Image (cartoon, rainbow, N blue to C red; front, side, top):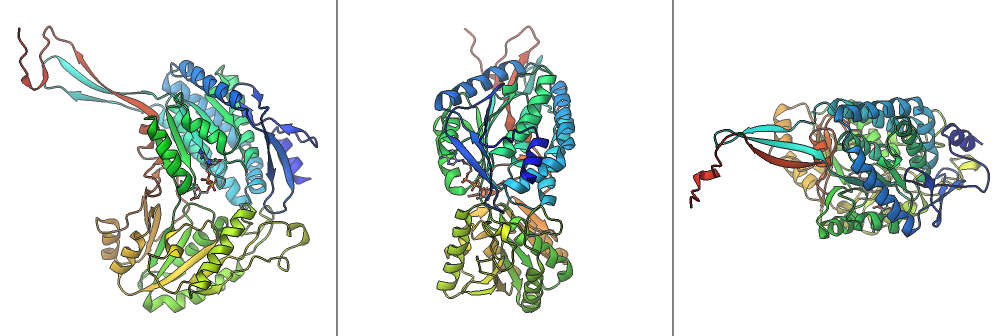
Length: 519
Ligand code: NAD
């Protein structure tokens, strides 16, 4: 089968009935419960993967700690050279790994490849960073003294990741964490274990070639229990969590409870505002991609569309037409733009959202169906396909759950506004604060949007959709999205331990602030 082909190209054993080891701490193993990886498009069982027993998990954590104690002494530019080799190894397998993302997560091939490319890009970034993770020298008020701010490796970074970016989210973390001199231990989503096994094999080979302990990039497949063990372990200095707001809240509190560091990348509820002066022919494909792309399963997917009254009906009409042209089907087939939802649970969430809109008096403008059998070939009838949906809830009031909650499926809620201020208020009136986008050609609108009274999100775009960020800027959101920042910008500064070091080169020991303590 094509799954066998993809898996064997990625060095994953494919014999029927064989359990694939899902734990790596320098050696592959895991004798705990097994988890199943299923293809969301066909329902086919791709493979069974092992997880760690609680004891094996603690061992993996300890091995990560030992690995860190060794790895931290490697100079940063040399660590960067290792990241560069990982980049090369990933680029070599971009197509195979991209195909595995499509098979296991369900996104289309071009997006699967894009995800691997994102990992490659962040490696490039981290290679450069490895020569400029600079501290500072601060002038001291005391003669003959210097103050240095010094970044040192932090320790072990535990990465808990979501199903929807089964490669890139780990990539963002690993590249920075490794350049910073840490060991990283990955607990991926339980439904995408194969992507994490494939990535870890690629990384492990490079580490081995360089004589670096494998536990510098360890892996523990598993679900909630494995996540909780990582969260609770005092041997893990920082937990970088990507997932839902509900779990993020639990994780954030638990890590805080032991005074660990936590980085949260949680749900989004992202709005696009279209002004009357916008170039609608540009806004249209962009809104289409952001709302339908990845079947609405990006944290940055557009969930709310605010249209100015003067262009609302024209824009909506054109958008409906565009929705109907989106080709649904197998994510690996050329020309497919819309794959399935990831699992049956997500289909349930989609159905509930449609029901809530209808029962509260809202209108489904297009979509709303989950029975796709007539539109799809028989081999996809077990897949989790749903129709991308545009809805007009009865009221734009953001006190309604329909507007306030992130529905992780292709449901776009639309409302009409009269003044930009009103639309900005709606944009900001939800708990989440990840991504946002304004379409306008009027510089005054842009100034308002980017300024103190503008969007309160972590990502504030102009004439660019809500999804599809590049790695160069810090990525993340405010409010219930968790305030975390990953990838570019100053994100690397969280992966190190900072010390303020005052050094006295003089023959006196003066006190700061002129304090006198003469005896
Ligand atoms: P999820 O919250 O269900 O799971 C995330 C991870 O947490 C998984 O690895 C899971 O096994 C683990 N986990 C579950 N319970 C746990 C517990 N009690 N303690 C520790 N770990 C636990 O999320 P999901 O459904 O996989 O992903 C979808 C969500 O992720 C969406 O809300 C989406 O917006 C969000 N997301 C956010 C970003 C971002 O950068 N802001 C990126 C991607 C996805």
